[in-house]
Image 1 (spheres, rainbow, N blue to C red):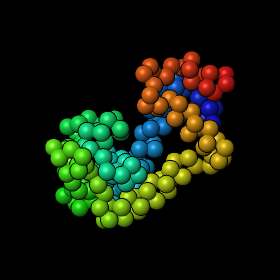
Image 2 (cartoon, rainbow, N blue to C red):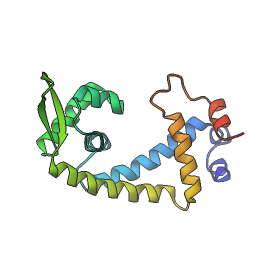
Image 3 (cartoon, rainbow, N blue to C red):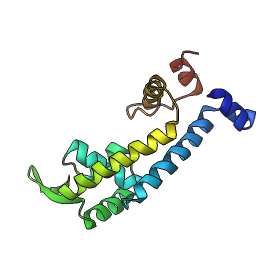
Image 4 (cartoon, rainbow, N blue to C red):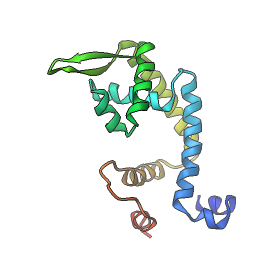
Length: 164
């Protein structure tokens, strides 16, 4: 696959991890966005809904931190999901000053449908990659995107992760 990237882009860019990750992101994101359009969701709304469905009740502030979304953007995303009936804000029984976000049954159904569409978009994005390659890619991307990482993933670290 590296030879495809080497031939497709200028040599100075084809060898840059950041450039290839950015291109891969644009391609994957475009396919995911197209899949979510059918459900009236953006990737940000999908990420919020996915987190509320998988993690359970969560405060808006915790959700924002959990998925790394700007709090102001999170307000708009949650307001839209709430207006559509996919999430509700309920008083937190342990702290009546706070609200907890919860997925509604309608939100859970939407999430399940959107999840299938995203999975299909990912299969399309990955093309004919072998399952072992997909697993290795997920492991490496997970190491780079680790939320506990407080330093940037450098070319050297990625090369070491790839065993080069």
